[in-house]
Amino acid sequence: MSIDLRPPERVMRLARMGSAHPMRLSFLRHLLRRFVQEGWSFDRPVWEIDAHGVGRAVYRAKGPDRSYSLVAFAHELPDDMRSDRVIAEAWDATFCLFDGTPTEDDLARLAQNVPYQEAGRLRSSELSLSRANRSVRLWEYVVDALAKGQQPEAQRLAEVGYLMRTTAVYGSGKFGAADRSALSAHTLAQAPFQIEMLNVYLIRCFVMDLVEHMARARNANAAVLDPALRRQCGIGNSTGLGMAPFLVNHPRLLHAWIQARETALLRVRQLPSASTAQVTALHDALLAAQRNAADWHSEHPLQVPKLAHLRQDLQAIAQQLQHWDPHASQPWNALWCWGEQHLSLEGQEQLLALLIEPHGALVDTLCDTMAADETQRPSAQGDIGTLRQRIEQDYAWALRCEFASQEDEARFWYVSQNKLEPRLGQRFEEPGAEREYPLDVGRAVQRLHHALSQTPDDTRLARWLLHNEAHRWAAKRVLAHLPYAEIQDNLVSQALLPIDMLRCKLAFFGASHFDPRSDRWVRICLFQHAPFPHELEHDRTIAV
Image (cartoon, rainbow, N blue to C red; front, side, top):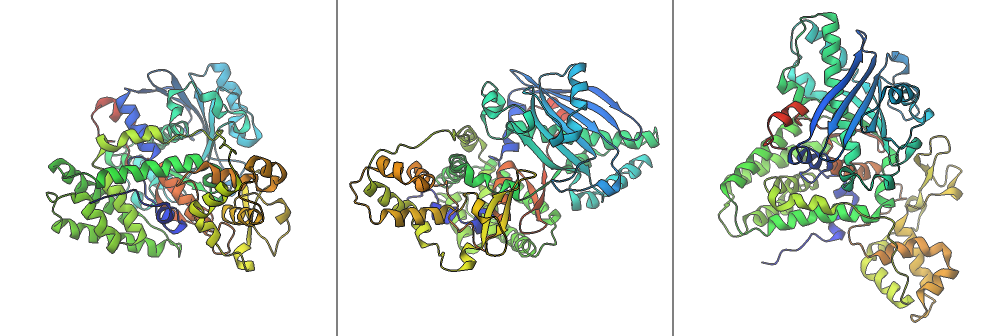
């Protein structure tokens, strides 16, 4: 039986992208495996935090070729200044990831800048900038329980999943931090978002140390968190519309991510048999997914039915495994084909993650293919006929998009003047559409195709583009010929749900507990259940 990659017209629709799940190719999983395989070590050379939880600390990660240090500043934040919004001006903690080990002069300089975030300035020795707030629901409860010598209730921890959540993790040249091009010599930075994931991983270490420190400040005999409860705590994140355009602005990168995931699925489906160890790992992964789904809560009307479908689908998968024959020909493909027929989109994408999980030796090297050079430019050699044919073959979805009503063009993307963050406006209700940011790929390609209709096929493309500058952006995307580069939906429609774009990207980060707070911002959790540094150093065979 011939098995092929899933076609882009099935994979690159927002409804499916908005049902994506973290998997073993996700960036944080890649980082954890790197820690183990490369023998990273960790220490905490600075801890100067007072009884009120205010002060500074440094966490250092030592890799095979260089070290990185998280410089953390803990603050006393009045309740009336607590906010997840990007316009906030104060936080419970602020951080930067430093290239190497900071000197005392470095720490003094950073203390004058990092706590102010966007209002401060960094140097090229700083690789990222971030901030976080304590969970109002959990922080005081956990500190108080430990101070009394007790453990917090596991269920209460599970319902939230974190004790602090970040509201931004900036990198790639923002506010003076090292530009992406300056990281070319860093082995760590060769794969996507490893710098940012390291930042968040070390923040998690700081948060767990801080909560125990504040408990001991109240009672020298305070309890320490049970190791299982510690593992249960990840780092939360609040993120919004600013992240969504990334997928459109980085078509080569998006293509690389999706192609790696789809290739992993294909490799597993093509396997002729299933070993006992692989079957055991599949069942273990299913149990973990069921526990995650049980702890995953949301009150948003978009997410509640999706969670219900996911829990039902996981139960259906468990029942199907009772009848699944791992000794039959191509058993993994049989399980996948069953899932495509019987599961919701949520369940299908969860099944994808489950099937990949037992096959690290087969798929993990695909992480090395998930970077991309966005500076590459496609050649404009050729003629108009070739471009027209490429549009009709690869962008048929764009030609099918309707732009006949105000509903079809209701939105426009723009960049806010104050925060330089992407925003969505209402085209026919709000001013500013003349400053529209180009994210409407379907509409742009459709207009390009129409503009070509009166041009002879043998017209040289380069010459035509020279005189039709407005269509260069769309032509460049078409000429790149990247099957998984485009979201095959109308991105300016009134029906657009930006959170679908957010979830796709966050799943590749490795985020769990996706909890929309509106159609354009969301809370998630990172590194929940991940091992801590002392566990990685103690057991280099630990499963990650």
